[in-house]
Length: 314
Image (cartoon, rainbow, N blue to C red):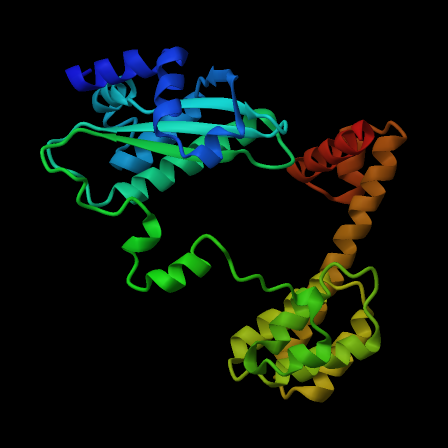
């Protein structure tokens, strides 16, 4: 461990010293919310440290074992958790930049570290709401003031759009659209309708008609067939209706249609065999008897027994 890292870690692992830094450098609006008497140094999990090193240094822990162990010792970032006066939690993270020159890509490393620390906290505590995460960057390089932005949004080409959309995914919830609206989505409408109804308890004939209309809009035959097969396998609807509608609405070769029917028949046979196996297991039949009667292999039977056990626990 370098001399800089040693001083940094030894100092800020002391809660009193870290509290002193918080009192000096944290904005008033943050300080006023935090109960510093609850300040607690967090011990990050082994997986957290491992993932952090892989992310930041892009090394393979097995191939670069010596370097990996060295980096484990030299990671100088400090993470504290603390309660706010309203009962919520906050994570306070202190990073150190000991290079003589500032790192223009620090914002991405900071983001990776903060997200990793947050995930580690969530995995450990399972909170309903996430704690606020606030970072310090301790810098003592030759060039001062610090020459680069620390806000990651300022690093993007379109920083104004980055502020609005980075880490804020655009939600596409098919359940919030009517089938008629989805049919207005052109070539994607078939897939979208197939997805929308994949978990419906029952799919009526009108929805099947909507699917066929959507499939007709797709010019990519292989994709169209894939979407149809997906719906055929996942929808709770009349298979005969779906096959009949497909034959009537789309001009497909008979080989594909027959293959679809055969796969559906095979699926039905498998489901029936699995249902029989569950009944036999519950009645105490031996594994050999279940395999012989149902035709299921050992791995499938093992998975069925595992599911029965999990269902019984719940």
